[in-house]
Image (cartoon, rainbow, N blue to C red):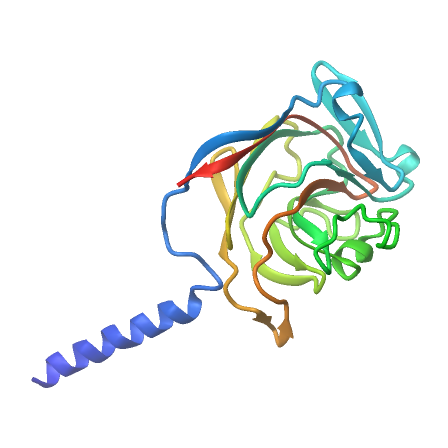
Length: 252
């Protein structure tokens, strides 16, 4: 009888622990399937990105079907925004390749909207110039994942981070994204199924998180973010190239 009671208590404690951890790491489950194609851009020419918005002194050039992005003379960090809004749930994929391994940092922003639900390009919002705090602690909200992390001040960090803005809250320290010295093309896949966020590099999962806890380290980050825009950010030392950016709805 005592043994059975101990067993029941152990199971109860385990269930409580798993419940408390659910906001930090998701339970294992398969990804939803790709539904309707919402957006497709091969990023192969200036014409393809004529409606995209560059913030900061970033420059794009095109070669062999790739869009190369960098800051001339490493002047300043920059963000290149896709003009389309995406829904609460989606699968996004693109290819990325590092052209300069000595230093750099690459981020994707997603679910980006103004703090009051505005379009991020609303004239009611302050203009942005690539300064990081404008995106992480300013007048827009978003998630972001740093999936290549070899900044000059923090070389070869070795792990991806998922953060929630505009409180710059660290939701999850993930696994290594694109390796610091890799010069191979990589496929990046970002899955947002409402409040469940995953990222894969070449089918290797590096982020898996359910945003169901508003308070992170005592800061109220608010409810899970829904739809919004996607943008590619690079620190000023970075020279990456991208192609085949596609976004699908989910087919649950």
